[in-house]
Length: 156
Image (cartoon, rainbow, N blue to C red; front, side, top):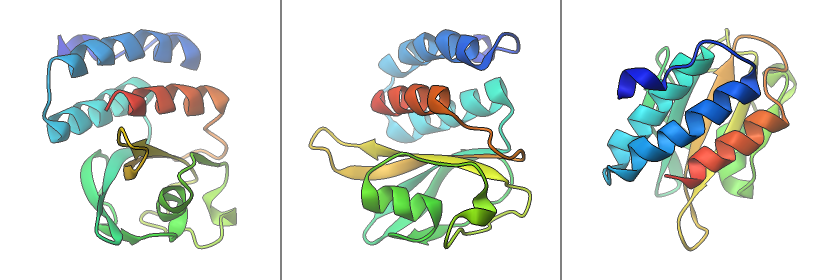
């Protein structure tokens, strides 16, 4: 079934509309969070060919690198620092059209040009991690990405 998760045609919205129910099916049969994070990262990377897709998990006062797809990444991020740390601190999804214009951006790779970070919440609303997606293109992310990625994160 996993090989069926990758969608190479259609608009961005079409790809999400196909991917979301497939991920729902995949995730519903597995309760291991690391396995689920790994599969979501792989599915997003393969479907959209994003530069980097991964998760950071809250460990004390830092976000620590979790499952990801793409080049080597920053390992630890303090609360409030960079796009990931700010999304954790505010509990809000952040869409950054140009990472160079974001105050305090952490350049794990100079190839990353735009970014979206979505908080992961527990049943009590506490942020326990973030989904971080980077693109090599400016202004890659929009309301479609935000709503669909928030829906996907809500399944985790």
